[in-house]
Amino acid sequence: MRLFAGGKVSFMRDLLNYLREGHSRRVRYFREAAEYIAEDNLRTASAASLWMLLVLVLFLLATPLIISGWQPTAYHLLFLPALLICCSLTYLGRRKEVDRRGCTALCLLYILVTFLFLFLIDTLGTPENVACFIPVIFVGMFPLFTLPLWLSYGLLILIEICFVITTSLVKPQSVSQYDIFISLVGVGCSMVVNYLTLTLRLQAYRKNTKYQRLSEQDMLAGTYNKHGGRQAALHYIRESNPETVCSLLLLDLDDFKAVNDTRGHLIGDKTLQCVGEVLQGEFRSTDIITRFGGDEFFVLIKNTASRDLARRKGLAIRKALREVTAEKLGFSVSCSIGVVLAKRVDVDFDEMFRQVDAALYRSKSEKGKGQMTICEYIPEKRL
Image 1 (tube, helix red, strand yellow):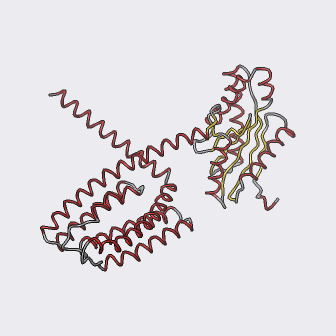
Image 2: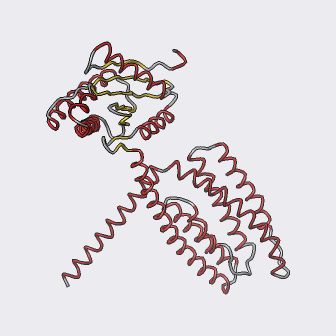
Image 3: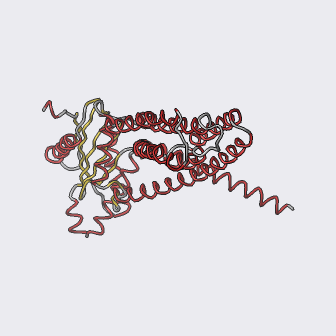
């Protein structure tokens, strides 16, 4: 009996942990992929509204040929312009590239308009007939879109409650009981299909993210590679302009060619690994650390343009690099650094990189090896 009770407690604990982990993954997914999800939802709403409009026209033309004496109700006819409006708005939303909130609002508008008219057709429009559309649309609508479970389930339950109440009031009991039963089956199936669809989307996103990170990672240094770092920097600057605050640090190892020539490329690779380790230890995980090529690394420090901080970071990097290489390789490696600070200006990344490259060159040519030069970013139009 105790063994059974212990097993039951363990099962419940595992179940709770599974649910918590699933919830955490979904929350992270909707936070990290918010822009993509909103755009994808808007594309789906645009396509779905167009197809729904075509299906409705076909239905209105074909039904009289199939059901003798059938006449469309006012709700059938009003559904046409409502869908046309949804189709136009979602199309314009895509053309205008509305923001995330606009995408979500247009998506929800389409969902609510569709449910409203199908709800009216299945209740007030045909009080003598069993519902045809609501149970089907329950299953087919929400899995089309990527919505948080609380939102899709909440809308499902709210619509079902309204449907049950309205059906009970306007339809004979002999008809309403079937409507209620079929709609409940539709809600249950929709919840299951929606959950499974969201789970599959989450798994696909995690795999894509993993492959994307691998494609953007420098496997030797453990940092971004040139392409990945450049794209991440461009994204940050694009989101921050025209008042970007950041620091761009460019680091170049002193006499690295001599290390490769005299000690071999294996030691050269280990040296680059040491640089990656030092930089990842000195900067935040949100900063963009990149091996730009050969023995050059750049770091985009977000939301910071402090000369004092840049100077401290430069000193810390050079000190840590000497210590780490001495400990792991048996000899010390020095580096030269250039830094450019951008303080609430409209930044062009390529121009900023040109300026930091010039600052690095001044460090090596004017001050000597193992030195650092810090300067302010000058927008290109002022040059």
